[in-house]
Amino acid sequence: MFPLQILREQPLIKFNQQLPMFNWHYPFNSEKDLNEDRLAPYLCPQKTTVRRRAVYIHIPFCETICNFCPFRHDLHRSDATIQRYLSALLDEIALKREFLGDVKVDAIFVGGGTPSLLSPQQIESLGETILRSFDLHGLQEFTFEVEVKSVSRDKLQAMHDIGVNRISFGAQTFSEKYRALFSLDATRSQITAAAEVLNSMFPYTNVDLLYGMAGQKLDELDDDVTAAMSLGTTTIDVYPINNLTAPRSMHSALTGAGLNALPEALRVQFRMHLERRFRELGYRPINGYGFSIAGDKCHDSADPVQHSPKFLYHDLVYGYEDDEIIGYGVSAISQMPGFNLYNFVSRQAYMSEVLTKRALPHQVFGPIAAPERGIVSFPFRGVLDKSRVAWERVPDETWFALEDALEAGLIADLEDRYVLTQVGWLFYVNLMYYFMPEVGKRRISNKIECERVSHACGDTDLTQLTRSSVTLLGGRRSF
Ligand SMILES: C[S@@+](CC[C@H](N)C(=O)[O-])C[C@H]1O[C@@H](n2cnc3c(N)ncnc32)[C@H](O)[C@@H]1O
Ligand code: SF4
Image (tube, rainbow, N blue to C red; front, side, top):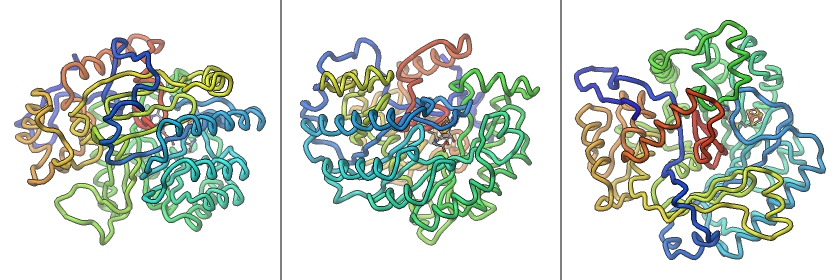
């Protein structure tokens, strides 16, 4: 088991170690939970208890491949391939609708890969299908992920026309040294020009940055933060680079340049520095990764997160037991109350399942009860609404861990909710691990051990990343 302990006496460094893994979907499942009935989650009466729902759609193509990226992506080779994939995607939406009906959706996230590789016509047909297939009356957020090289005004107009109100793109770093090492080939002026157009067309925009890469210095991080702020997006997501899940090619490039991985303790210092720097420059956290300019709508000052602008999809992915994610596309993950569903990772298998067999392209695990889900992912959201947890079913280990974190000043009890304290924010990943029951901790510990020994160790639910997980580790989504 990863030997994580809270250090009560220490004022700031509250844990003996930093977990080297930065995000995951919870709850986990094992082979014994494999359910032969692919329809089980749709037929289960628990479906009626869903409080909030998000749709995730995965577009697995990229124009160029960044060597740090663990997400499910294929090099874009032909428009015909994308068109065929899109047909499968639209068919999957129709197929699932037969079982789901017109379900109410609060947030939609089209991620990848690079959804901006879709043509304007393809964006429109995806939009039409979405509009026909879900009840969108309560829709609050509709995000498209884009990559700056493939954005154009007509594509953005098509996104706008189908109701997209939030665009997210990756800058990752502005350092020419790291951009070359990561095979990032968009130019700085392409990034700036794209940000300008996006900000003028959409109410919410986000830029992704990475930090904590091998050999990074604090002043390099400061330069990246300053450059990201100058883009004027509504939020900035700053992901600790996930060395455990990053492909070997990234490690070879960095070690080839004489850059050594930062010790985990130093990465905590980077996180502290980031937090301080964003606050000094007038920003506040919106979740474990995201920051936005501090606004009037900062709500209750006791809340560690700002609730406007919000990243709702993130809050659902790292949500409560009754938050539902329905994933579409290759490798997409769905989390339905009591069930985890994994779409096939192989594009060929996914397409043949949908287009030829007209079958649901997933494996189902469950039923799995996880009343503690909202508590485990609370450090990622910053706030735990007590009324959303079935406390009588929460395992003792999670209760004890909450009490420990409270005594150590990592969380605060505000009657109707628990919130992370400022010190708690620094250790949000450790806290997620700390709140899990033994069986979950064992899972993460094995994964860390396994990745350390060999990068070839496969464990589907921790490595098949999509944003519907987010992306799991080290993030995207995380990281
Ligand atoms: C699916 S990707 C990006 C979407 C889009 N294709 C782009 O490149 O802008 C989402 C984000 O995950 C983050 N990410 C990718 N690989 C990562 C890693 N190894 N560790 C941490 N974050 C990572 C990056 O910041 C990236 O922008
Ligand atoms: S970061 Fe984005 S563009 Fe780069 S490989 Fe990953 S999904 Fe593709």
